[in-house]
Length: 297
Image (tube, rainbow, N blue to C red; front, side, top):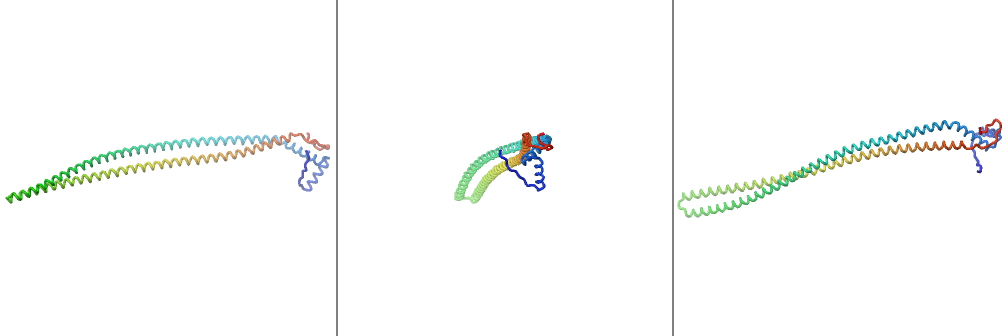
């Protein structure tokens, strides 16, 4: 292999002292530098064993520390998993309770609605009956009116036929009282029919309003419970995402630190192995004068 030129800037005193040492050694500058380098390697080898033992202990310490940190992370992850599992179980129980409550209330509302429909059907039958009675009353009223008309006609005939004024007055008074009684009875029957009709309309309106209020309250209750379940589910998912992100960030930071430390230790071990190989290489032969160490001892 061809030799290469090497140079370095030093002070004049160092340069003069180095030249004198090369001259005294009787070696060329190249041989002198090689000899000097070998002596330096030998000195490094004398202290490398102690340093290597210390480095190995340091590596073992860091590996144990890494192992403990990793085990701590795993145990923390297991604890968080148990905690989230328990929280999810509680939320699931709450959700089931709310759903059961909604179903019970829905069933009760359905029963109330069926009852209201049945009451409405009963009211419709009652109204039909009242209408039938009204028709009968109207028919009876018409009959009474015909009777009154006949009595009035009879009264007219009696007025022409009866000669006695006293008897005529008595018959007219009786017929008038009869007509008034019939008119009052008709008026009473009409008032009774009107009252029944008004009462039926009010009862039907009240039932319809009660049914609408029950349906509206049921729908609002279902909507409120649905929002509560949705909000509870969103809060659980948010907590889980935050905890998972926190664990993942901590894990990545630990892994990054461990990776950096492992790389540093690997480079250090590689450097130690490289120095060991260089120290085991054969020394370069060179001429030496008596009293000058050769580096082969």
